[in-house]
Length: 298
Image 1 (cartoon, helix red, strand yellow):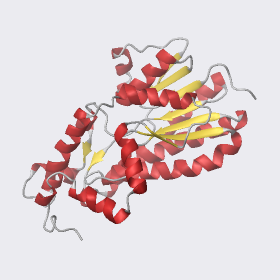
Image 2 (image 1 turned 90 degrees about the vertical axis):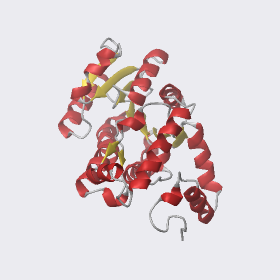
Image 3 (image 1 turned 180 degrees about the vertical axis):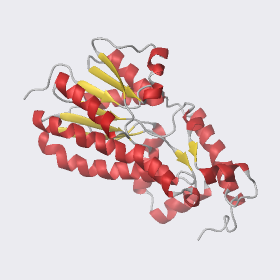
Image 4 (image 1 turned 30 degrees about the horizontal axis):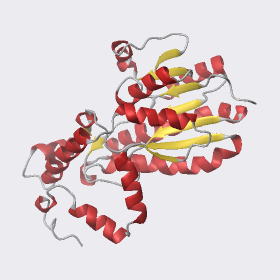
């Protein structure tokens, strides 16, 4: 079957940040049908940003972790248009914590929204994509999905998992003309770093200088904030990358969306690992103030 003239795009986490920028970019620069979703409590944000329903735009409440809501939204789209032509998994959260400060519930919360929910969205849209023998699946990953930073362990774990599953999926669905891409932004000039969640123990450590990991948080948080403030990349520039990836005839599996993502991709690929890890360790902010032995890594 030939592709429909207008594609139907389902975007999660569309009411704020990068998701909102993607929504506006697609609305302005394409003719696609857009199904923009957000958590029920966030739906008012669409109105606040001037996004209203019309011939091209649907606004739907969707908590991606709730199976009934996933089923309802996708079933409605398939009933109206036959299939989701382009799925963009953007919804996600980020926890700031060292490994020792994460309990099992907090790990499940991080993995649930960043990995398990996108996989469930993908599983649900695939049968209709296979039936029409074309489709696009884009999942927003991160530089944190190719390399890990201290205090961001479970965030990186969730993105590493997303990258691994998406790589396997890339092979699995090619026979049906379905393209899978991972969008890899690095630091983006936004207030996103202020919305990072803390675990119970990481919050305590960050607030108490006597805690063994206090310097980890005290050093990394301002470092990340500074990098996000000074980077030239914006949600709008990453959104353009997403739009261009959708339009490509043969989009790659991994798409670096910021200059630092491109740099670290090459750096990680070509630098010998024993040098790579030690060099990055010594570039960590104020690392000599970290716990005992911090200035003498093995």
